[in-house]
Length: 110
Length: 125
Image (cartoon, rainbow over all chains, first blue to last red; front, side, top):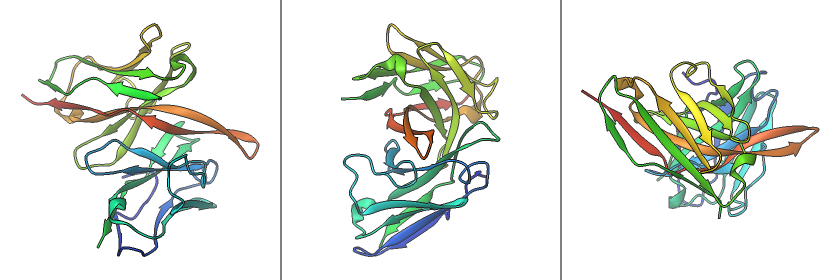
């Protein structure tokens, strides 16, 4: 049971917009920023969004992040087949004194 | 180019000891925290702990405290994760990652910006 709650799966057709939610509590998302990681099949996780809504260099602007209260969302617009991956949210938890992850959402491009 | 290169796959028996490594290059290794993350087969990411190579300050997730030891060697820019007595439940992929700091809205916040390639650990009798 992960501390942050994500839907286990999401799907969309090419070109569509998809959102993945991440729900936490006051001690994690409510008090700290959220980061998102993309894990393509068989590869290491890669930083996708940091500090709620910032994209690292090289990440397409089709990916965007937002946060409100104790929840966060990742949006992917103009869905492409290469976006098929697992997406994880993460945040620092002040009570646990460590990083907590969501369980991951598997994105399928139909 | 900033890189973290991890040691190769390991196959061990229960009760054996193991030390896996994560070598940093392309940046000042001693100036960034390095974290370790576990991914059990078919499961999600779990944060294990973190070390600051500059002074070896180490923090552990409560779930992993006492189960593993995190260390670092400054001269070789290498971080380590070790077990004294492996269990079958330690079978997993282990990733190291660099923690970066950013100043946002009046305070510092952190994220893992560069990840290692992962080390597979298989423990079976």
